[in-house]
Length: 505
Image 1 (spheres, rainbow, N blue to C red):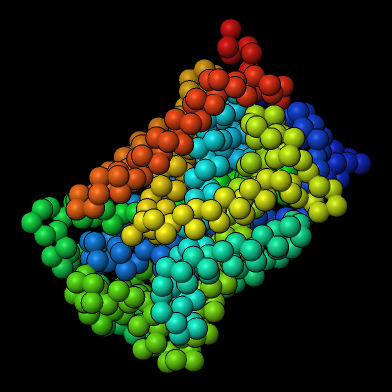
Image 2: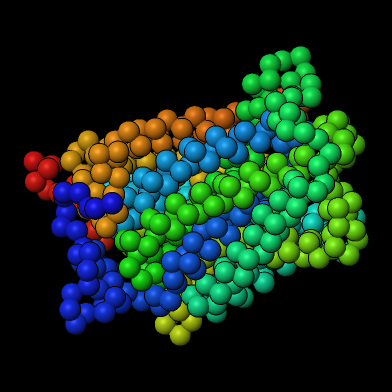
């Protein structure tokens, strides 16, 4: 799609005598920044980063049993619905990143669309949500590691595995963009093997149920309506579809980002969604007794299916592939979080900006921001010892935070359009911009309400409301800090320039 009117678009062709890296440096300089990162991430590597962050294996495997137990096999349709909704969000993001291909993702997009204060809160929420997502993914690997090594799934084991994964991925991330790209592509292969190939095999050769199960609630609604059960199980779909924004978090590491990143974002949602749906269908149709999963008798149906289908050795090999997928997902999450925090610090928008915004030329990464992306998730994992259902709580808070941050950008884009913004990057929606933007906002707000809704009245009140309470605490502390310290006032980086001055007057 061609660029629309507005700010002067970057030329489609690189001027004679100027290579792509020179052109990328020129564009970044015009946007107010100096290039430091190594632009070593190809379109394929950028897509792999987003795909391994989105991770069909992690998304489906982490909550598969919970979703079946909560709403039966029809919970699969939440994966379809969330995929459509998040694709709309990805299209909005694609327009913004094409015009502003700067490291930092949602924070930098909100900054250029609206302004410093709005961007400050967007970045604050997004950063904390990312850190909790890292913790949730690392924590979720524990049961699969236990199955691989034949040990009991204890809380101590799960916490220990999570910390080990954080350490391994942290070491890889500290070695720079090239190794991050290589690891992301290896993770992509593991994801495809562990998700698409196995899901297809189960669907073709290990079916225990017919397709009708996806229209049968198996009594999960209890005395209420099925809508309530379905909305509760929809966490699996909502958890599945974020990661595409990571393609933009590393915008300064991709050659020709205004053209490549929008493609990578869309590929991430489309391919990731197809694989996730196939995986869900394959495993659901291979469950010997769906009633046993719903009753809690079979709390780990995936391991049982793998053992039955591939034997002890085959299932062990597959579990290794699954753990590689978890590792690559955490790796991509850490990279995205560190770039987002680095952008925050580089713009002098938070305490310790000098450390968080520091870039190491020798390592090719922001060491302070990356350290935070390793240590804080570690603290969250250790802190999970206080919750009986830690994984669901961590994931729910992370999903809500991500969705709020996403919708702040979607809302910012809508406000900017109303003020006269006309996307001026190498990729745009053209006349579809308004309807897609509005539909994306409606979806995102509805999904956020669903995630936040308390559904466990039998537990202590603070545990039932922990997702909302956690969000209120993060937003509240951020608001107090923003009002008292006014960190946004210390930043001289460009802001609110998506709307041309001629349109504002």
